[in-house]
Length: 247
Length: 291
Image (cartoon, rainbow over all chains, first blue to last red; front, side):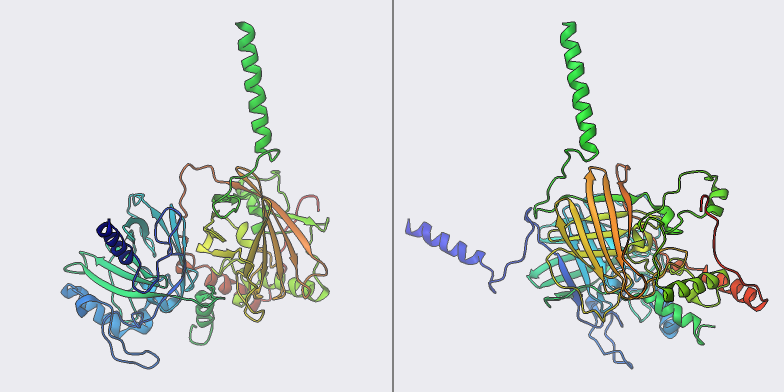
């Protein structure tokens, strides 16, 4: 009897998370990822380790092993992109940023979670992604800027499989690139109430010699009055096109 | 035996009739979500697409000739005032007349419809431009995903105040509440850069829109919006139209990446500037039958 009680007590103690924080859950027991999140790093500048440039802080990078396994031709293309990045970066033309770049550009985004569809609303250029749960990708060929996202739960991790990209988006301002054969697997795992771990696997046999990974924490924006606003980039770019520089 | 069959048939007819009545809003009431919200989720499309061309006059009569729609019903969405015209203040009536001349010979981007320029359409215009919308209801909020230009609105229902008035947004700042089966959305904080249609129907940054989305049947929302703007309008005015559930069994919103493919504005301005330089002027207008 005493022994049984002890075992019970130990089990209860183990069940309580160390920090006293449990993750929010939906009525069906899944982690509730609803809320406004933001990455706090410099991956938007360069996903690899990089020194500072004017208006751009240095950073340790978010790529596992600090190396992107480009084929020789793809590595040359990255160097060319980097050299001409002010002109060639699709985000400098206000184009949709692609996945996973939308996550770590430095803008907040909001997760709206329902059982069959998880939608992510991004502040940058009113970008949106609909992640359809437990359903197959449509048959291609389709080339979308933000790809086609299908989700499933693996334990407490939301796993999102994304295909059907175009070859126009970059991973960062440093010209890291991919082809339309890009396959992204995102894993959103709650660490506690206000933090998610975000891990991304990148595959693209036309550009990389093997699959590679990025990972970073995502932070909840806990301000009481926090809301996603607008970064209507096209309006800025239109003014630029019309101005003396554009014509 | 024969009588029994007859009574069964009568009972079936009565059941069908009451079911049909319920569908028209008689006794029908929507199911409720876990947080108590009436369930308005799904894919919807408004029947007011003509308003995207002109909120006062409906579809473009020239397009009707091309599309073989001459003589078809062309309902106008303005229900008040009864003359279906926007009650502009003298100053805004003048500005709008000038804009209609500038639309005829556009020389600056501001003379081109913001929708063509791939900018956000704003509220209520996003509800009647071509392309439908999906409504999602996670607890405590309503999210509207518009197919056109991948626009969206997140409408909190928790009674929080609007963002500071000095903050201006294309889509405005939406706050919602449920009154029975009606979602009432108060929208403020607009900038001056959106038009209400392609006919240069402008407003100021004092625009205040109150929308009423009423679930009247399993497949229909009755939509009403009151537009108030003390700088631009002499009094509030009102639009109304139906929003119907899409009947496709499975529907997923496509990516409508508008800006990425925008190639229309440059030639529009080129022609406008050339015409203006050649001394060509005019006003953008159509003759509507019966006016």
